[in-house]
Length: 481
Image 1 (cartoon, helix red, strand yellow):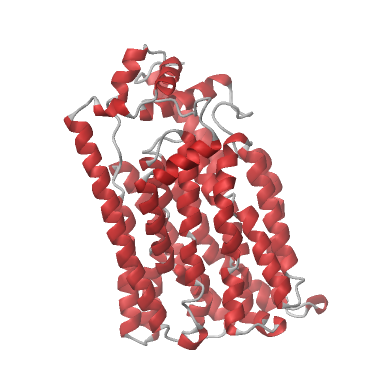
Image 2 (image 1 turned 135 degrees about the vertical axis):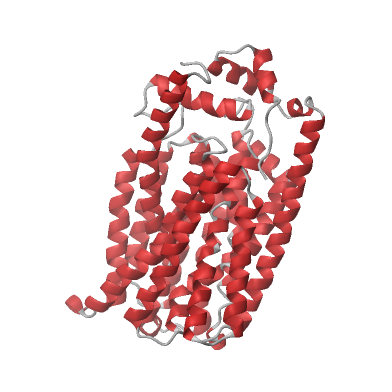
């Protein structure tokens, strides 16, 4: 393997990144588009008679939205812990097929019980994807490469809100009554079938881990492992004695993980409008097709903002302002919407609200940067933060009540308060990491206190260094805040 810093090494790294980027990023991008299209299909189908056909009351509809998180939230923790021992390509691909099948079957439901069952079951396979994808990316990219790649992944979610609305507009407008089937049922049939097809392609497109990916050469696999060991001063692997349960316990005891979890709960409560976005655009007073078309531009802008924000975060190594700053834009959007009932003002507010997801897209990246080693702890931390954090979405399902329409002022006030609280928690986490870096600056030996000898020895082997040289490099490790 070429030595670090040489021109040959830089060329080899660029080739490795290009190979990864051209295969991994488009795959996870498309998966995430379908992930949210399938998850939020209910909110779109609502515009074309789903509630009436299934006899749903306002509270029952809110329960249909919320019940997904009953399975989605707790399933993320065991899923991410197990993903360390399962080939991600097969595991994630299988889960994509399963949630596509469940989404398709939603189209045949005829009562409240049927759609509730589909929503519960779709949560289990969906739980594997987002935290699992972030963990997979953290096993391939360094901490200053991760934000932009994760943003590409998350842009799939934002584009799904735009693309999903456009796709739904076409299906709902043209498929009503075809073969005697309601258009909202066709929506689930078509979107579910697309997802199943993508799931089967995922099984050979996605990589596994740096040590066992089939479509990489031994030299590329070793380089991929060496890059991450150089990034943190330790090999990115668990020791033989680091069990799944041990990683979970380490994560649960870490105060930063606890604060990240609470911050994410509050953040997603503040951003829960996403589950009702087609309904919010309909309050502007246009017909179903126009409302769905108006729902697309805010998410297209948000996806561009998300990628630019993450690119800049990678270039600067800064995290707090690249996350919380966009929440403050959402707060401004709520203030505008609370202050005016004009169509133009409320539509501008929707752009600001959508761009708030540029901050959320960086949350698990920050968790991965702050909780790096061992990988078992990092996997558990990512799952805990995202799993518990989605309780905010569950609570948010009940904050956008029908009786508060069309202005939804109480809903916006609740969301605004949640984002203020989330900002304060993010500031606390930032100051904790600033203080930790100052301690490392003041005493370089402190950087070695958290080092694990086995992982440093493996890093030395991968990089062709002595143990003493690897320990010296370990001193340069710092947290990103």
